[in-house]
Image (cartoon, rainbow, N blue to C red; front, top):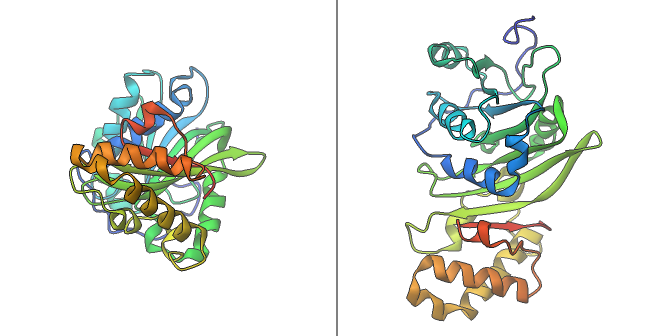
Length: 266
């Protein structure tokens, strides 16, 4: 079987590599709520944690959480920095692998990807490079596979991510998901600060993402009375109000209850 670490030249540049325990815990919970069958299915490709950073902790935590759903699932941590891969190798097990690679994920012969997480990776690139990176990440994906690509705060308490589904040789955008753990006062500026690269420079008048935040602020103002009961209650009320105002939000109690807001038309 070919060595995936030597088969292709990694595409991309080395990230700062900062990470922390449990930083991406809620991304795992989101996938299990949003499309559990993708992880639990007995057949299909591997799961990829792209750009795990200096330490392999996010990959190992992902593997541990998903193993509770599917013990036969293989999780592959991918890093472009060879030293980071070498440092992670001692943590390999039967269903946990670490490989050197970039947006063109190294796969073994016959191997495919069912789900990929790429967090805090693309923010260091220009907006014009996003589509090319997505195109590379699409290669090797199962039809119907999912990419969660976004940015989080250092603690992981707040994040925003693109939800992309592999369809007919390309990606179908299923939404933009916002997450908060409510350990801080509810402030939309916190979400704006961690928008994925394809949105961060579009927070200007007339752009759809800017219009959405304006509508969300109106929804918050209209539900200000819920603030008395805490940020989480106010957040939930604002989502219902967003729907009433015409925003394409997914009114799924299991998602909203865990702090996830999925907007399907951004």
